[in-house]
Length: 167
Picture (cartoon, rainbow, N blue to C red):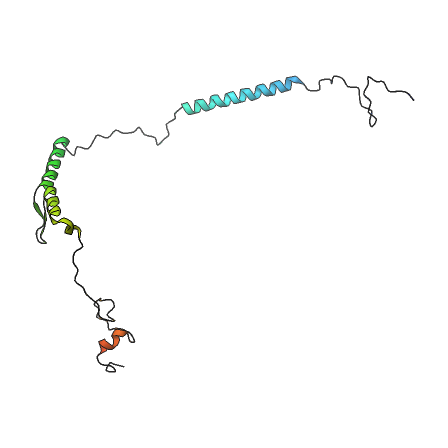
């Protein structure tokens, strides 16, 4: 039985070709042309987008913006403001009627604060309310033209003596 050579690799399962350089099976020219085509396409796309965004084509309904003049409402805005502020100061610092019929007047802020301080701790007390207790069955003290419903505690009092009510 022949002995396999020691410098060759031998495969017992399948007989493979001797290792060595593989012959180039890929054509280099089509690969380079494809890469060049991609670069040219991307460059042309970028140039087209740049030109598209730089150009401005007016549409059929586009009009130039019109500049409107400012409103001529005030001839002297500074003087108007000064008069307005003087009127406000006069109202804050002077006496006058807010509603003469109801007896509501205004007074200067300083005077109102002095009067409030003169009252002391009673200045912020709640006003005294008269105590009103609603009668039993009177719907919480509300005045109503309707009689109390039958069987309610106020129904007997509203209809008179017991058994004297209408059937």
